[in-house]
Amino acid sequence: MQFRDLNAQYLHLREKIDAGIASVLGTGHFILGEQVRELEGKLAAYVGTKHCVACANGTDALQLVMMSWGIGPGDAVFTSDFTFFASAGTVSILGATPVLVDIDPQTFNICPDALEKAIQKVLAEGKLIPRVIIPVDLFGLPADYPRIEKIAEKYQMRILEDGAQGFGGAIDGKRACSYGEAATTSFFPAKPLGCYGDGGAIFTDDDALEIHLRSIQRQGASPVDKYDNQLIGMNSRLDTLQAAILLPKLEAFEEYEMDAANQVASWYTQRLQGLVETPVVPEGYLSAWAQYTIKLKDQAARDGLKEYLMEQGIPSMIYYPRGLHQQTAYLDMGLKDEEFPHTIDAIRRVLSLPMHPYLQEEDVARVCDAVIAYLKE
Image (tube, rainbow, N blue to C red; front, side, top):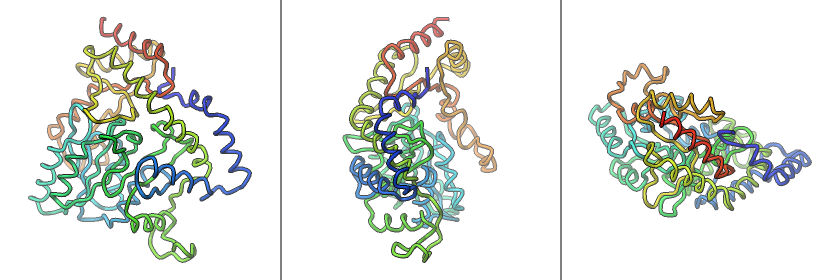
């Protein structure tokens, strides 16, 4: 059993994927080929934004937006303490200060109450200017944007949605990657929509931002003369091969993969609810199910289950084994575990089970039977 079975997906889509790759090889347009523009148009249409700018990876996507907004020294950028490092690391790269915020214990996403308290604390200290909020759509579930948008408006801050895991999710029909002034996603192979390498994208309705992003992702080149570099930028383009791979994957994602992933999640929840803490999807929300993450009663139970599943040939993962405030790179911030009680609880108790659209009900039953057998022991 695979944790996320990319080979099963490839077998379903092999004919279209192979044809897409062959088309790129035949034309030789490996950089900025027509498939990149085609993909950008289809991604924007799916999400519901005016523009999509494809780039090299999800980390670059975050950095490019903040570069365009002029984020740098003296600026405070607020994000979740319970997420992948890039959500905060890109802030540090630009010389700004990441302000880490505890999570909602049910959704694992940034807690709006804790966010507002963190903003008020920064304002009271008077050393930094609150500029941006980076909510993270963790495990496929969009963050609480209705509340976060009110907080951003109150303190005159921008929202940059980190939808690396959220692509496909929605709140009341409004899709992830359409929130804030800009949003980003990742096409890392294990993401809900993944390519066969690194890839990412930025979504926005801002015409000026889109033009600026296309310049700085190509070393700041002029839109009319690529040898006239008018800005300081970086090299961050999505390869044409990856775009050709993503096109049939996006088609499958829209047609049946999202529905299938939600069916798999439903099977898990039906079998495990009441035995462990199963994922919470608030009313009106739709998850993309980047992960199916349960919580055990304590760390010993979690670690024991992970070992037991491995003995049964069932893979599982711990996302994440530490909060960002515990990362070596951020130890000099002097932040204490007591400031992030829900993050600390999560890192001790969470375990992610195999999750992808091609899991069959008998596969889910096998995993759940193993979980139940361990709990009985």
